[in-house]
View 1 (spheres, rainbow, N blue to C red):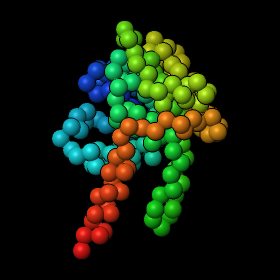
View 2 (cartoon, rainbow, N blue to C red):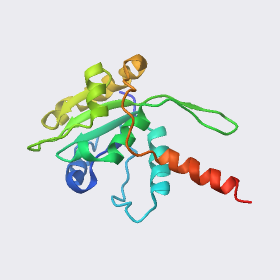
View 3 (tube, rainbow, N blue to C red):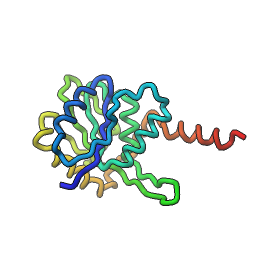
Length: 182
């Protein structure tokens, strides 16, 4: 298996312990963790957080969404999924294109997991791969490879759901203000 770059999307307050456990389980796998090692970004502005997230998603090949009790209510998780599903043409001299990322829904062993609608739509369409927490040890590599393969089927991506927050829109307003300030 080729080394894969992973970004982890999760509800911080309720699911961080699962993320830490998952990182321990992945020692020895051929993956690069593009998630944040500093687990609390709360002191930063939405602008800075969104930019940091964007760069890490761009650099990833697969986004793994940890689905727990409060995941479906997280505007940030919804935005990260939406962002991962976009094709983006970067500005600058290289004009690099970032294609949609593979998507894995990792179902945590919680009593009442809530699935973000945007993620459920990708599961229903066949684009996102579903993996149970108890199967991580046996099937994680297989799920990653399936998510990578699904990237070739971008026609399956359901774009009908628009995330509730749009840090990129916030960024555009900031840049517009700065450019037109004088």
